Length: 333
Ligand SMILES: NC(=O)c1ccc[n+]([C@@H]2O[C@H](COP(=O)([O-])OP(=O)(O)OC[C@H]3O[C@@H](n4cnc5c(N)ncnc54)[C@H](OP(=O)(O)O)[C@@H]3O)[C@@H](O)[C@H]2O)c1
Image (cartoon, rainbow, N blue to C red):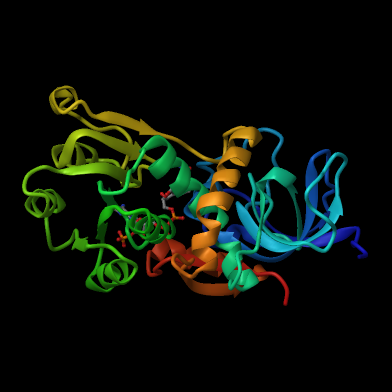
């Protein structure tokens, strides 16, 4: 397996629009201790990449400036101390950056085997949303079988994953989305009721559908007035998990129901968490979710893929919110 000294990568020339993503030649990275070098087949696009391109979400210290939080491909070199993987193994991997490139390095503990039955391009769009949903809905949100769950942005990459996993683990699932077509996609993925937020008030629908009881867990990426409105339709002992604030993080909230309903308000970002935390999440995914992927009970929803050098067009599509599910970059093959 010969590895070239230089590779093509997409860099952010300067903060700005999708046209700021430009192909460049960069030295092929070398795997450090406990890392592997991956010859990338495909990379997933995520909304945090758009924020990074806009200059609003810098990579953690020590991380490459090349965007890209997830890839699939073939391991072509091993750093010192790596066990459990061999050269030639096909994997998908969660990254802190560097996925928009022909080669990238990943912590060995953040690699997972390609789930049976998935193409490499489909496997590329699994890690970021599956790690995020698992750690926020099941670890932090403690969603249990028989409970009810509401995800905002149900047709997003995160939302399409959250709907399927919550359903597979026995929850009653509600989702909000911005059109009838997106709502249809949510119900086809398993949501018991999708709410078109442009046509209906999700608070009223949730109260009606739960006989006034409310939902046990909310996964929110919208923020703004969704936070007090979600609190209004949460059940006693409910858990509210924030993962983004598309409508802003500064809100006026009446904490009275937080007290009387004994609610938990929490949240997290995945990218900045220590490698050991991500390795632990990888372990839980491999045990509990990989069998569901292999059985076809949950699947990544791939909306469209673009060649690596058209990353700007892929970002423009994501910012238009015209997609349902995930967007990928095909790097080779
Ligand atoms: N905390 C973490 O660890 C973490 C990790 C990954 C992603 N995230 C966040 O999770 C969110 C989803 O990521 P993704 O990659 O799945 O993105 P995505 O597919 O682009 O989804 C974003 C969705 O949000 C909705 N939306 C956009 N602007 C909105 C607005 N102003 N108000 C209400 N809804 C809006 C859109 O759906 P509609 O057309 O229905 O409005 C869109 O489908 C992003 O905000 C991302 O930053 C957080």
